[in-house]
Length: 597
Image 1: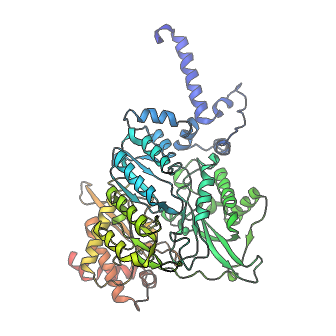
Image 2: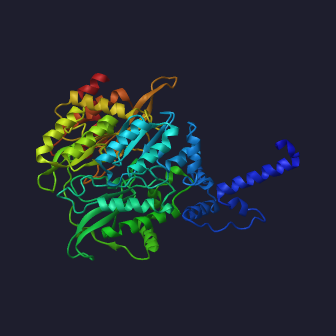
Image 3: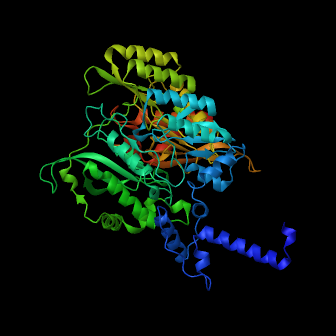
């Protein structure tokens, strides 16, 4: 048909098509910047707040990053039916469609795997046994027959072929679940205390708050398409930390004492700006609010971020960087303007100290507040379960507990509501599946991201190396008598939050020849912490070959066991007292490293 047009007509049509494309990418800005196009119409609808922010960026001379252009060219939700039809052919998505699919929870992970990974949304990390078993069936029908527990108390299923993506999502809906907004520039899975409602120490049950915020997000499209991803967590003040200090927004249950400028009782303290991969933890704002206010305050915080977050540089687009540029007072003033009222603030002197935290509370048998009942933490090998294991575990939950499966941020899960008389049976049935409710000091705190086997960004096989490290330490350092957290992450995204581990490893390519040949390895940091001792770790070694990492960790732990003042001195306290240079020297003086030198 093109042969029917003369050259002049062809040039006209090409120019017209180019103009339409430019208008789509800029939301009408290109048409309004010429002479005669007129000013673009004021945006309306749920995406208006984002479009105005993009327009302001361009007007100020900024250049939108590719992801912002992709959102403007075709909203990921409006492109859903096209994505389905193209995936049904079995073809891999284009980069912009890989980004759009993430709004629906599907991540194309090539070249690590030529398939999708699906990440779910599970508020507070709690599933019913029939949902857990149903996910196992979906993993068999559409994926690789296994799942991983994530560091957001979530589940992800891998090896989903393109044509199976939508059937998998449909299956989640049948289970009363969703993956909507689980990836890309959206609010990720809402975390809450894993032992909410069953912990005698807790001040507040986080389950209603997490579920309410989860539903608030899903039912407001203006909260999708942020400048970058966003994390929110609710801590109930119990024995098991939820790592809210690593979230953009953390709500912490606290008891306000008599004499404060607000009524005494249980309030939620607001902390902001956590992003451990960028070496920052959330900081106390001084603000307290009633639990029922959390949704509206979180919504206002997000709207300030939507309007002012960086849409040009993905490395600087998290809320932390707005806080860094503005300061907390200015940001909170903007939040109060959105809310139309002042937020309550309480001096820390009028807040009761937080109760103790138990670093082993996610492992083994623990008494619930309900008489005669227990929760039991099951350790998973770096978060992985086969579908057969999942179905068997779901049956245990139904027959021996209250039917719930509670995921934790430590990549494992808990049975809850287990009567005293059923505890031994649960332990035996778990052991028969090749799993355990007992863990060594090293394995209980072992965390690893997906790694190079399943993520294109990772520089190292984190899950594989984590298991090697655990086996090595258990075999060579039987005298380790306290829990030590070891976190392995494959890249700067820090999905395994390596900076808050006692020992953290971040994937690196290690040059091993003059020709530039490389092998997998890690940079190693020490002294991180969370909960009642939050801290970003300090780097002590760069570019350590993966095969040498178990020996380095053994040397660090031997230096600790030899130099600690008492068993009560934690690894973090020891490293802080010793300092990075002295610690490095002490470790390198251990026989295990001297022999390898």
